[in-house]
Length: 239
Ligand code: 3PY
Ligand code: MG
Image 1 (cartoon, helix red, strand yellow):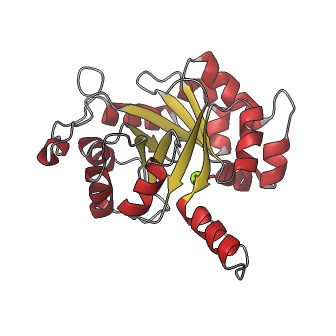
Image 2 (image 1 turned 90 degrees about the vertical axis):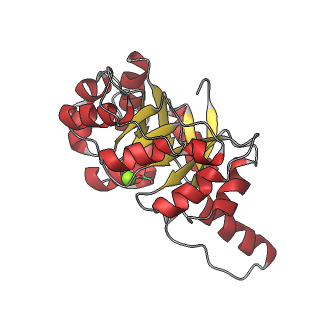
């Protein structure tokens, strides 16, 4: 992904809703199998419903798990986002799981051709930086061969740092955590993305140096739609 992009975050586990996001003009959609409702069946159903014109589809896997990573790529995800990576060894495992030999150790078994689609041969590996341990090892993590991008989870990072999310997002010091992550990632020529969840938080992340920002979730858009039409619902907590 080049330049600056806007993504959508799908948590509802619905192929139809993911399709609405993927054809909305957003540049990419991430199917969330960590905190969202995308189990294997829902990932398959969504990836197999892709049509020409869909935005790029990424999958956030539930954990650093070789089987989950291979499954998402076999079904056609372009990129896998691996949560909670904290050590060089974990970054190497994530990268190995994404790339075929000789770069990595991904097992061959594409299923997308079963429904006439192309399997992802050259998947991309984005690791999540969202803990102080990862922050302390930024250079080590982001220089790992086979890691193609970094993705920040500002909610987890704020929780773990013991600061308010708004404080983390608004911190404009040179050495502020978000700015530092973006700078080190750019120094390593990686893709640099983050979860925002709203356009306003997305702007703050862009100002901190993030190029690929998930500006909305399917649940949030549904909620905003209900409130704008029916006007009767209190804003929801969470995604
Ligand atoms: C975070 O902000 O920690 C996330 O992982 C967003 O989903
Ligand atoms: Mg997180």
